[in-house]
Length: 92
Image 1 (tube, rainbow, N blue to C red):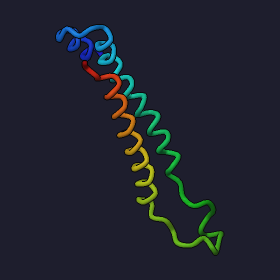
Image 2 (image 1 turned 30 degrees about the vertical axis):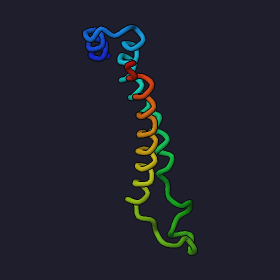
Image 3 (image 1 turned 90 degrees about the vertical axis):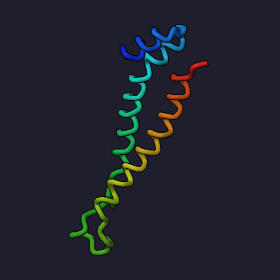
């Protein structure tokens, strides 16, 4: 935040542009918290215990389950970061 404010001040930007550069790091970190929380909800296996249910089917690969949450988080982060950069780092 301090670095963004100092750099925007050295360039001579107006107040609206400076505030975007100052708030950008906070918005990126809050986006990180929201996206990782949503991604955690996508990491889950089929319900039930395979040892107790004879019709459980094949076991899921744990890496595939983790990848599903990762891909959801990655997609949401790219979309969110695009809009944050477009809205707050816009220099006319």
